Image (cartoon, rainbow, N blue to C red; front, side):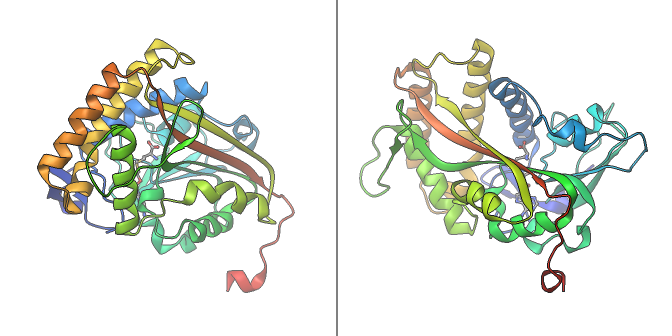
Length: 318
Ligand SMILES: C[S@@+](CC[C@H](N)C(=O)[O-])C[C@H]1O[C@@H](n2cnc3c(N)ncnc32)[C@H](O)[C@@H]1O
């Protein structure tokens, strides 16, 4: 499929034309990065799914159970394709700002929907048993609103899963590294790069704080029970961190290298000069290979079940 009608070119990368909030590329290079990042998450978290998913998707009837992945990405290794393969009787909907490209061997129980989640999920109320969102906060203008919409799209007994980064960087003691973006370009460079990305996301209208509030929203909402949360500390600059396998660090390094390029349209489009961008990028690459001081990104994961007896108040439906 040709994606040109869904994208425009910015600093050599294809970015989506549907939503002005989401500024990362949506091209082949980015899809390769997301695919490899998907495998990395499986290694870092030790599995593909929350344990509850099996029971929620248990069925012997084709199409009885339905799964929605909001902002699914496009690579062959994207999460909704895993669900479709592992639960072949489910009907899977892959929602994104660009269509899912068919690949050889793609499971047939996946359909693609081009939709901006910022417009709401009214057409999906009460239709899904699992709703999954991972790393979409930069393209979501009001995540709290989307969270409420997901609550309505879920069927009673359904499972919701979120995984978002908070766009801060943390040191070896998991203390936040605060970086001033005024003044000279100085280390730590990954933290600096990430702080620029955070600022660009805010500037374009994305909800960079969603990860900070997700647990609170879910745990205070009367519709949800059996709420779980987990922080996964991603060793963006591995330093002397040794908690994961060598394969996981290799994938992490590959991801950071590619992500430095993914940030270019947002940062340079937001006014950063090429010289400053390359300065930060090259110094981050040096840190990646030479620094002994780890820098972490926090991936906050929250999952919960919708109460089987929850009745959505009528004034919320109307
Ligand atoms: C960083 S990628 C993550 C992809 C996938 N969820 C994963 O974890 O590999 C973010 C994806 O969300 C999509 N996205 C961002 N904002 C969106 C929105 N408002 N509505 C629908 N999709 C969106 C982007 O097009 C992109 O494919």
